[in-house]
Image (cartoon, rainbow, N blue to C red):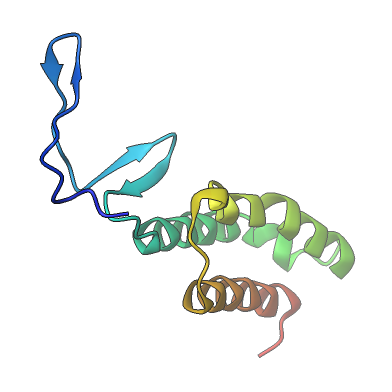
Length: 112
């Protein structure tokens, strides 16, 4: 749904709302044309940061691989998928998300 060419103004309490191309709502980037790629790229960057912050855990010899994977699934994946209910799903997006997850798991498991 593309709202960029809409001529209707939205008025609340006598004030006209400004038309914008994108905005952030509850931490998610929303675009007026329904494109979710900016949001997905942003979520991947935030999840990558969360993954990096846990480097000491990934390198720990005291934790089993099973525990590390459980931590990854509970600490990084929710950051990645926050707001995913509103994303449009395409093969390109699915591949991008799978690629990020596999990259993290390879690092975690020390597989090249």
